[in-house]
Image (cartoon, rainbow, N blue to C red; front, side, top):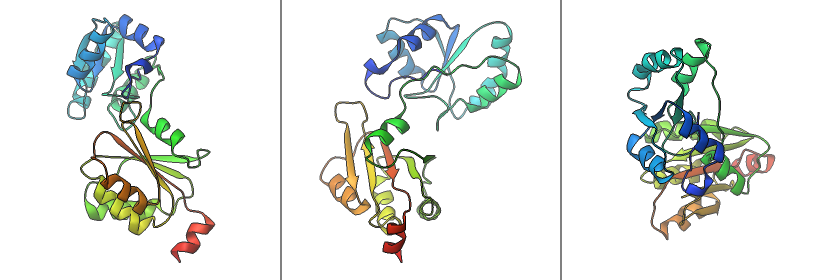
Length: 226
């Protein structure tokens, strides 16, 4: 499980490059994107696809290759594989078959956003992508609003405006942070209430990968919602 840069190519580790150079093949969420990454670093590994739509079908062939003594690196489009990205079914099958599974740690949008959010980091819950349908999203946010730890979620640019509107209602004045384009040229972190973040976002073009970090419920926030 090899972590790759979430934006800045300088963030790849020496160990990740060595592993990608040594493995028999690389199973990638987006083969075109991964080939560009490998070519940038002068690597020539064989690349096969491993994404949400073929992941389970790929498992038998990958297990057969491991049984034959070959090695496979799993990478996602960016960041750490298996974290709201493909990887889990292959890892589960490999563990069940007794194969060695290693994490080659590195960039993670979840951790990067949490670190710069200005919100508590001693306890947090990562919830992946919020539901795309308005009713389900609002219900999910209502559930999460009862949690006391910091919440980290992914959101897409074309839904962020509606999600922030829901957060205005559910989170009210509780603090949040919106991190986008992490490690890239246009990296930006907006902090404040959902209303303040939403207003700040309107003043700029909405683009790039986004991570929401939401402050957990405190005694003060319970009082403000009463």
